[in-house]
Length: 155
Image 1 (cartoon, rainbow, N blue to C red):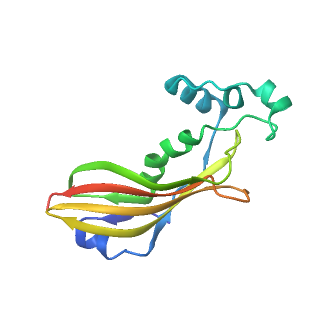
Image 2: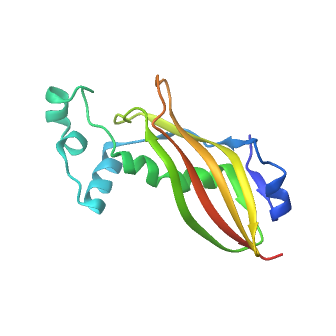
């Protein structure tokens, strides 16, 4: 399944209520978790100490930071939708973020996106997208949320 191509507000609006697509599976590695810990100054052992996590964690290994999962959303969104003719895109917010299950190291995740709504606000387009980050083989999803983007289309 290729990217959905959006060239205008009208193109976007046609997809309200539809699943826009799914991203590719991405493996979450210990190196990635460690780099995120360095960037955010969050070095809690459950994320960064594989030996201790193997002994003490209920998961038997390290887990990704919840916000690491959220932070790779843009990468996955870019695999799902190509929005053209845009002067500017702004991350406006996120509603109803709920974590369902931790992402253990070496798990694979992907995002499923559904267009909840899009509104024209005096030339700006406010899109609300329901996103779910799935964990391959997981009983629950890593998280669900509604992401809000504001697009300023050229036309």
